[in-house]
Length: 334
Image (cartoon, rainbow, N blue to C red):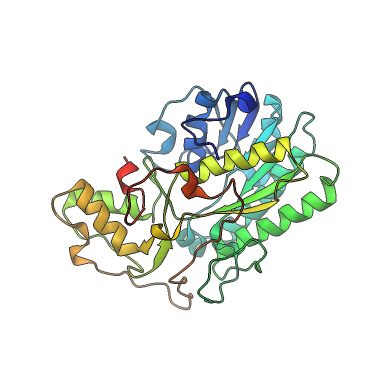
């Protein structure tokens, strides 16, 4: 698999790309690295929800457009003006805590927004493929203790996870109903992404930064929970490889792919805090962890959720050159 540091320029050079989530970490990084790959990228997003944000953390040679919420189809229809050949749909309400506060908004953005993008893609004359980014949380979690595979049953107990499972089903329906003889449409499932420029609330690393600055302990909801951590560049390099495979060999490329790190990256939430503290401060942020009270009548997330990434081009760890030990990408987070 190619990495973002060595993109397949022969394929991407001059290709027109639409990316619709430029103020969140994965979308903004994807837009930022685009010129290095020779891509002609247009990014669509709502106005940034926070200051600072990914949109002002980096400058890139791409066309960024502030558009209406994707659920209305405004941004998706507007994207047709750049005549994209490759569409990456990353726009989402991606915070689990926010999905409890606004479940209807979460379903509207994640499900109807995906429908609006796919409907707009039906009208694109030069379209070569569409890649919809969902989540590792789309699977029904039976706590079986094994990594999820792409053929496992979809589910999700909280509104965010369930809305992403719905987006998977919706994408499959659009693919079968409207794209059967047209450009390939696929989904990519990844999660627990960390990296520089992430300013979203209720995220582990962004929560550690103000705690570190204030000299206070960081509040953790589930410090013992085990997660498959990966640096943002890892799944993004997989997205590029999958999009290229879809465009070049649509009959061979899979339509749903897990993007996950190797087992060495699995560690507890508190271990990430300890690693962050050791890397960025003399004092340890995690010394006095005080867990937050989780919402009443809300099921606790699984303490172990990982993906079995079997497709040769999708395994995120293939693109990383990290040192032995817990591989959580802290040293690459700025």
